[in-house]
Length: 179
Image (cartoon, rainbow, N blue to C red; front, side, top):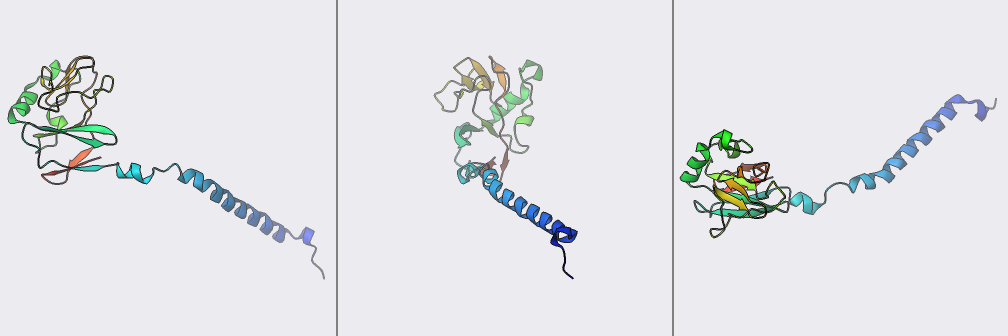
């Protein structure tokens, strides 16, 4: 008794399922390199975070680090700068924020922020001792006249927002991880 291949539904179903499975695996193998190339390369991953050694920064001194192609301002604030920043009434600010919202609790002497003016993306002056710090002893953007205070808050000028705070954490008293 010979089996008629054309009328055997089990064999036909098996061939359809096998063909579909092989086709799906082949399509996935062809598409995977296209999807994988969208992942960031090693140089981008390496810049995702940096560890900044702040042990050599003196009280009253500011230092610039580079993270993701942006300047990061780190200032070791004096007790007077901290007191002045705390004393500013919120109603006097363009973008109200308390000093405590801009620093890590217990590390108020350290201010870490992205050093790019929120108006048009210039780099404000005030990092070096001989640069103008503006009317509020912080940073001054000479391009359009934005003045920031010692907490990086916009106090005068066209900038709409305070200087941006990057994600950061203190790994120790002398090491900050940014990013």
